[in-house]
Structure formats: structure tokens, C-alpha cells
Image (cartoon, rainbow, N blue to C red):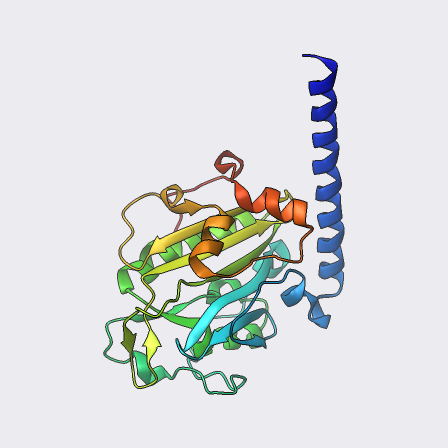
Length: 264
């Protein structure tokens, strides 16, 4: 094998070990102090809109599209143990200065009010569940997509979070050519993305899915984070150390993620 290749392998293993434990330390800190707001801002994304922080998620709201360009939140085994029931209390977000989309914008449009941060991930408290129904957390989704492939991906993320801590960034891919619905002019994304950062195993994976019935297995929609950044114009997790960000966002080892395609 040779001394030089062996040395390189040793340094690579040590590098990964140090990264893993540094992230584990940060995750422990966030677990101990969940009420001071760091759970929403431990990792940062660039934003082109109005940044809003709720109790369990944060978002960047784009007025021209009447929806968030991204929604960011954390999920782990502790948060998954919540038992709060779904509220279905859809309403405008009072924190949006310019005013968020309205419930009426979606009526008779043919589109679902699709959650970006899903209600199923917000069972830790009544407040978190209620806030997940703000219209700022919604985007127009085809019913077959929202209740099919998108729902399966949300369930898969919960499966990954059971034994780990994952940070999720998600949204529609927004551009000027999109069609609109409602009196507010809510843009209808052609594609949606979701990025998952597993801080325990120090790995990332991204998905880009069309806003229609999903017929392929979820693995078919995997993208690198670099690819998603090019599509959205957003720099995700930019406060990571540069070499770590480059390493995690430029490639994906899909075999390191367990897929359950029959998940509901």
C-alpha cells in the first residue's frame, strides 16, 4: 500500500473523527438549550426576503412569490416524541410585515396548501403545531404530489431523525416565469427541494422533485447541495467551515443513507 497513501488515509479518518465530534458537541449544546433560539439559527442560509423566526422553524419570505424561498428547522428523536394533534388552523402569518398569502388564495385553485415544514414534524408543542399552519409555511402543490411523493419524503426524513439529529431546509424553486394563483399572486413552483444535514454522521443529501405525481423511487430525485444552490441561488449552511461545506455539498454517498421506499 505504501507509506504515503496509508498516511493520507489516517489523516482523512482523523479529520472525519474531529468533524463528527465537533458537530456532536454542537448538537448536545442545542439539545440542552432549546429555548434560546439557537435551534433555528445554528446553521445559516443566505436569504433574499424577509427573515422570520417562529418557535420551531425559521423562513425567508419572498413577497413577489407570496411564500418562503426556504424554511429551516431541526428534528431529532426527542422532538419526534411529541403527541400534539394536527390543528388545521390555516391562517396568514402575522409576522410578515407586507402580509402573507391568504387562505382564500388557494380556494378552487386545484392546489393543496402544501406544508414546507410538515405538521408531522411539529408535534412537540401546541404552539409549534399551530405555527406550522401559517400560510408563510405553505406552497401550492398538486394533490397527487403533496399526498404522495412529498409525503413519503417527509416520512423518510422522520425515519432518519429517529436515531440522529437532522437539520432540514426546504422550499419551492422560485423564478419569474411561474404561474400564480389567488388575488395575492401566489407563485406555483414547478419543482420543490429538500436538503437534509445529519450532524451525527456528518453527511448531507438533497432532493429535487417535480410538482406532480411521483412515479419513481425517491433515490431517483437525489441531488447534491451544490446543484440545488445553483437552481435556487441560495447558499445553504454557509457558516460551516469552508472545507467542510465544500466536502459535504459537492458530493453524496447515497449508500450511507437508508431508503425505505414503502414508507408512508
